[in-house]
Length: 147
Image (cartoon, rainbow, N blue to C red; front, top):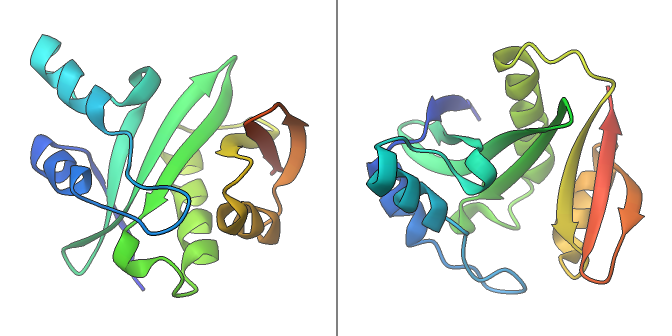
C-alpha cells in the first residue's frame, strides 16, 4: 500500500469525525481541530498537535498526530475503521513513525505513545513493532520505541 501524508484540513476532519468503530474505541477525538479552527483558523489537534491524514489512492486510510513533550516525539494515530483487523497496523504505524522522524528532523532516542490499557489490539500492534511498556496507570500505558 502507498502512504501519502497530508496536513489535516477541515474537510478531512469532517470525514474522520464520522468514523465509528466496533470494540473498545468508538470514535476519534477530533473536536479540538474544529475548536482551534473556529477560534484562530489554525487546524491543530489535541494538545495543539500537528495532524496529518494518511491517504492511499486518494482515500483516507488513517490519521497521525505528532506532539513534542519535553523534546520527545509523541504520536497518536487512528486507522480508518474499514481497515481495522486487515493486518495493516504494523506497516501503518511504521510508515507514520518514519514520516514523523523525517518531517520533524527528530533526533531523539525514542518515540512514545499512550494507549488505553483496555485497547488490547492496539497494544499487540505496538509491541509487534518494538514498543515496550514504560509506565502504566489505572487507565493508560505509556509505551516507547527506541530508535
